[in-house]
Image (cartoon, rainbow, N blue to C red):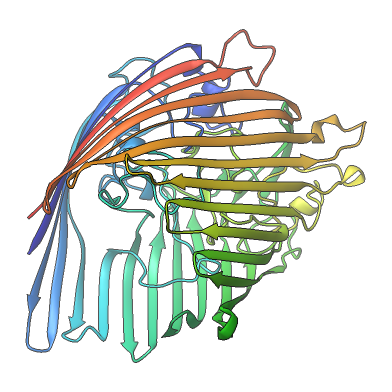
Length: 587
């Protein structure tokens, strides 16, 4: 039997008018127009005052028979104090407590506390997390309950990313090129994605692995999303790998309001950020199938290739315009050249506007606190996409080039990505079933234009004898031209992000880090946009033994700029300080 225990203390305080944004009241009531503050720009997690304590125990028992191994995993979770801080700033909560996977155990709701104690709770839950039966040689494994997939191609399916921020002693932009944050080799997060709930079977023979699963995805209370998925991987090693994967998704339950207009009762509401679409959606059906090949193009020149191709079919019922559904494709081709410490790659991508377009809300409505221009993410608020959209989002195509120098006293990672819209998003195309643009708001059909986004990335790490110094930079520029008689279509701004970190192995069992960062947005998204967050952090990890470790982290946030509603007398400025203490024990 193996048992792990973690105890986390989160103590956060904030001050300033920005603790309650001008849009807060409407947002808490379900309005899709989100407040500018309070949230952390690096993660989009809410930054609110409060003290939270979390205790979690996970025990895994395995009983070995002559030909079979039988296992059972159970968990016990305890939360006391601020629900918001527990849900967003600690380790991923056990499913029985986690509002992000649909649990109602915690009384979590969108609130804007300005003082500690305004969103408190005390909750204890015990649950069976899962079980498995496996052959003694591991060739066949059947699991039930909560689980992570053994294998998946992320352009066909990617599990929902965490909305919480795992405790760490250093931070980085979301699109960081770093090979690992300070302390990451000593303090791995308990989870990096939200788990699936269902049954899974994996069969391994020779170089081939077959996995079949039927599982529920995180969804809103009163709704369900269920997926059947199968994948076959043939891995010959040394970078040669071929795979095929397919999934089918269906949703049911109460129609939910979402910011796309192809559902029922479509509305286009003028807002300071542009024309905001909404409708009610239910009865979604999505099928995705894809193949992937990674291979050596020319071993003599250390030249490797990759090809990924997939297609998706989507429909929902009822919808605004029946019969307008269609299909979409995903295409990726790339070459990688390696020469000693240097790796250079060039990739071309295309994700069409009807590819993997299922709208999948989770947690509770509006559980993602961010405005339309909060960060250049492809899905806003509480929706996630079935596939990975970290390189490019839906309705985008373009290229990415990278140049990496790894190992040695100086390491450098550099990237340039340029993407543009495939089809313009208008009030006509946006009402066609399954058509989605992951970022821009709809335009009038007579004023349609094409948007472009560029991403620059740079990570430089120096490893002198006295420690490790790194600079992590990501810069986005987003632009969509507009006609003079449609100023609401204007999108032209820059999103520079930078983090500098110094870390040092104080002893074989202790690592410490300090750093500072800045995340800014400046330009226009229909209205002027100009604000920034400064981040200061420090932390230490102590591995007292292979079974006992402690992390202490401090972060200071200073947010300032102009309000997104110039008419409002409220200032968006606020400051926040957070101390996180976590202890882990393995038995």
